[in-house]
Each structure stands twice: as structure tokens, then as C-alpha cells.
Image (cartoon, rainbow, N blue to C red):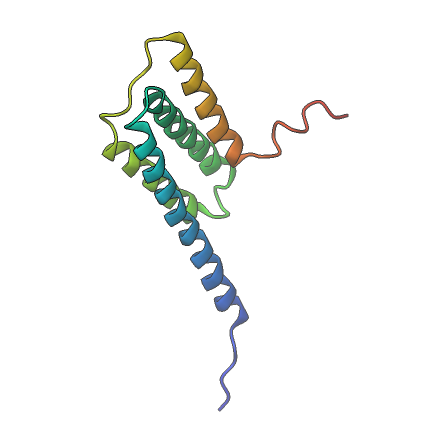
Length: 125
């Protein structure tokens, strides 16, 4: 009786390790952003903008990749929702126009991070 080596299971295990390792790195990035946000005037709109852009991009990804990696996207969406729950006292719509611009730019940057090639090919024939 010989044992066969399952390449597919190994590949799935490595993919899962990378996906959840990246999820852990994102959680650490949110913790660092929260540390910055609590010390600076523009930190609160930046944190709120990044989280808003991240949530919107994850919802779009759920619809775009419905059959591909739904578990990964759902876990990333759950992480973002957990971060929003933990820092909800820091989230506020800015009253001043410059702070709204920071909010918008942070949200746009978070969305572009999920779809890097979407806006770079618009002007090309």
C-alpha cells in the first residue's frame, strides 16, 4: 500500500496560510492607523475614510468574486466590521471641508488598493 502525495491539498493549505497571514497584517495595519489617528487632528477622518473605502471595496469584491474566494472575502469583511466596531467612537463625518477631503482621499485610496488596475487603464485605447 503506497501513500500518494496530494499536491492540491498542499497548495490549498499554502494559499490559506498566505490569505490569513495577510489578514493578520491588515489587522496590524489598522492598529497602527488607530495609533496615529488618536494623536493627530486629521487622524480621525483618515481612519474613517480608510475603513469606509475598505468596506465598500469588500462589498464590491463579494459581488465580483461570488464563486471564487467567498470565504476569504467574507473573513476580510468580518475583520473590517470588527475594526469598525472597536473604533466606532473615533469615526465621525468631518465638519470642516479640508477634513472631508482627507476622508475622501483615504476612502479612494483604500478602494484603489483593492482594484489596482481599474483606474490606470481608463485613458488608454
